[in-house]
Image (cartoon, rainbow, N blue to C red; front, side, top):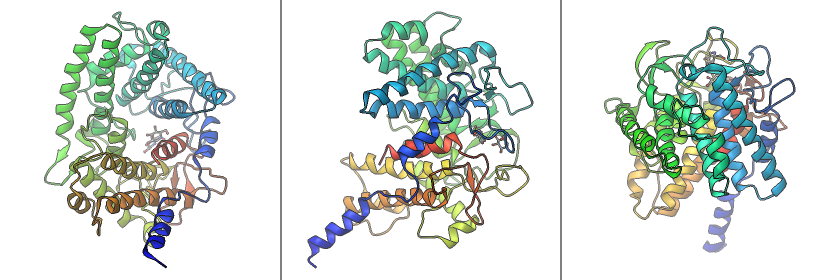
Length: 438
Ligand code: NOJ
Ligand code: NOJ
């Protein structure tokens, strides 16, 4: 065989993206089953159809915001006009749902983590407030608002999404005002377990404020735009303090006052990098602090889950954080890998590959070294290594999904069988969001 042929075969192999069971179209179908399922109000996104052990049949603010952000991203690239319109109408339903949730809670309780499927705020004991919710929700709605303005729907946006008046009553403005006031206040983390200040929450808040400032300016609300920008600068300063040079990674929580002990290595940091991506490189995928954190997170899960030892032809199965004791049913067991966490790492390497591909000044050896890869003798080699690395995480999820592509919350760290809430909506959103980078 000549070298060219070998090279071609090699390339074809590397770039063929085929998995046995998971497929992003299938994931979209399964995700859509969880939006406004029977017995729920329009615009409700249930975290999972599971109504007991565990009961996830609620509209969580964080899950819903992230899921609808993915719906928006799919809508933008969808070519079929009928499907595009269906997705768009889900976005309109979501806007109405947000309005009703916000009105039901009132401004000072926008940090409410979840709602019943009939729209009432959940009032039982829970880890509250959670300040990431309003920020993530604002980010999703701001993307939609800009899209509608580009389409000539500015009037609709002014009436239904962003109105300059104060006290804020429109959905985006309410969430932005709340975020501007509470960015520095303690709340519960993405995992609803520990109280303090959180990297992921702060990243979401920063992006909400910066993209919110842009939208406000676009709509002539300049005073508000200035105000959101000033707050965003403060959030940026706060975010810098999560980098711990002694430990060599970004910590997930600072000033923790309640909850379990954590080494602070947490995949929520990577989620924060994704959800807080404002396109300006701030704690972006190519930031050396983020690279170091990604490597350490993977390393820690490689060591503690037995499935990572026995099946090393697959990428590493990733959990929330090493000390996790939530197994999907109870909080006094050993935690497991999660699908959404594993996809988040896949998305990380895909986004990094894209970023470096489009950059003219990549220090190949430096990146290679930081990510503990070897043999990157050219930029192309490095890029294909990153892509391969990313595909490993997809393969891992594929291996543990069921034959029809269903994915629950977790997979057993011992035998890989799925555990926890079935058909977790966020598992599908995380898959699609990563696959959009392929
Ligand atoms: C405990 C888990 O650790 C937390 O993440 C979850 O939100 C709650 N239980 C409710 O399911
Ligand atoms: C537990 C997760 O820790 C939390 O992030 C999520 O919002 C809920 N489950 C619902 O999916």
